[in-house]
Length: 267
Image (cartoon, rainbow, N blue to C red):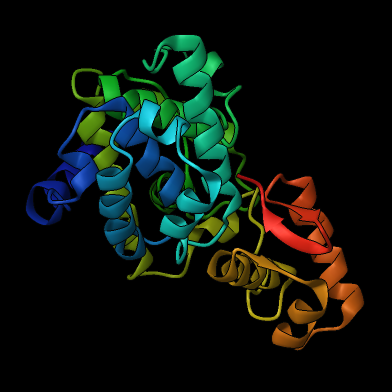
């Protein structure tokens, strides 16, 4: 265990990404924004979006009071637009029910839109330096590599037990930063250990997927403010049935509505 921890700390001291903007703040709001953005998105794509987003919406209150189209415009390029909607909804709840202050309670955070137990734990750890045990892709990769290299179908419960034993209780914030950085480095050095995880699933292709169509539809509506279904079908070069199916998911998720024969964003 000591050798493992030394390896992680040594790498972090020499190669750690100390300049990441969300590591230069203890503001719970800014850290929460970064955690939403970093879900399934590479750091390099997140940095400029994060800086622009924080500049425009610097507090829970400013985001809670923002219009959805404005939030989505700033989010464009990150993908998974549902996260932007969830983030705004979470800001509204925190502003209304907790007077703009992030609750220091993992159970409360997991009830917010778009936040699971691991994201809630990460937000609390990075905001308040609380030594909570959690797991994500980079962490899973590291522990499987060091402790389960000859195993198959490794359960997260086994990994979490080791995370709990190795977490730095005096400085959990930087310990988890160190894990993230070493996990990112490890990804470039070896075949993905996460394939040995019991919970491993291969991400579906984005190109040609309904998720890609969703993003295109939102970009068109954000540009024109409103659009007719016929124009969407023409611009997307997709079958009418597929466009209608994707539109239904956007309606269900609270992005759009039909008004006066046109598709518009919900404000």
